[in-house]
Image 1: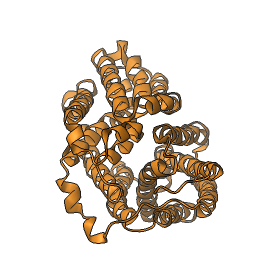
Image 2: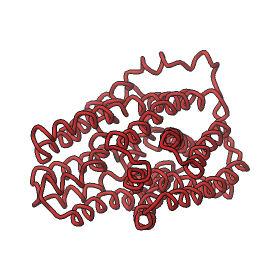
Image 3: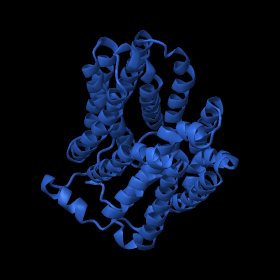
Image 4: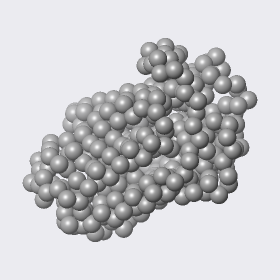
Amino acid sequence: MKEKIAEHKRYIAFIGFGLCMIVLGASDSLRGIFSAVFQNHFSLSTTELSLIVTVSYLGNLVFLLCGGNLLDRFNKKKVFLMTLGVWMIGALLFVTSESYPLLLVGMFLCMGTSTLMNTTINILVPVIFAASPGLIVNILFFVQGIGTSGAQNIVGRAAVDIVNWKLVNGVLLGGALVSMLILFFFNMPQVTQKEKESISYKSILKNPAFIYCILIFGFYFIAEHGILNWFLLYGINGLGIQTNQAAVLLSIFFGGITVGRLIFAPVVQKLGVERSIIIFGGIATILYGIGIVGGSSTVVVLSSAGLAFSILYPTLVLMLQNYYEKECIASATGMIISIATLFDIGFNLVFGKVVDLIGMRLAFFILLGSMIMFFICLMLFWKRAKQYKQIEPEQAMKI
């Protein structure tokens, strides 16, 4: 853990992780970009099309639960590279297959491993970049945002048939292979492992921070992903604005998330993880509230909330390392995020029915309620945080 890493080796690791994040960001965005292509090519019903999203969430659950435990028990570099290899198998299915069932298998593998690799990179950053983990992790997530927005802007215009779907995934597969080769030759420092018997789900569950973290992540997922999945329809059907205007407002939100991770990364490094989450979480909640309550007259405020959202997710994941020992942090992170994903699944299952009953405008207040609950849980947790920490407060503020 304490072994020194030469500066040039850190650059190599950053390049390898950065390329991987670009590939994952672009890949994650393709599901929505090519949804119309899937529907036409495979003659899918709306239910069959929505199954693609459901399978992706199931992949998150399975890979985070199993992969986190593997990361804690075995060599993290080998587990990461094996996970990347599984992602490549999923991408290879996209390139070579012509069937809907194999598309679902590919989505399960790619989306599940993508979330696990994001989490793994977040866990490894403090080990490799010990002096500035908050800065590095937000820059890496900014790089991932470039992959996402780049795919939306460039690939989105070419998403006309299944041939382009295969071509894009072939390019991403090549990028993943280069990333794998770079990281293969990088020697990641290892955390000294405890006995395997001491790393148990029971000890993770008994930690009093566990429930708070699930609630914080769960309500956060509803608030952010709800914008991703429903904002366009909210703008059109709930506020009565034009489709192109709603699309611009949505791009402002996620553009803010991408840019904010770059410009606010030094702020996170200066303030520390927990202070940054409280400050940015509070600002995001206020902007979110103003944007929804004011309707069409303040919807641009909701779009601008993306800047405040920008650092929240990667910094929240980084925060978990203050409350779990390094020997079990991957298992704990996997459990917390996978269980919190159930909030997302439950919300999406019922939200459509709520919209049918009360309309999109009123239904969107559920998202505001979730954002408020996120911040309430965050504040309650913050007041009790010191007694839950597994490391000294002085060290925690440096993370």
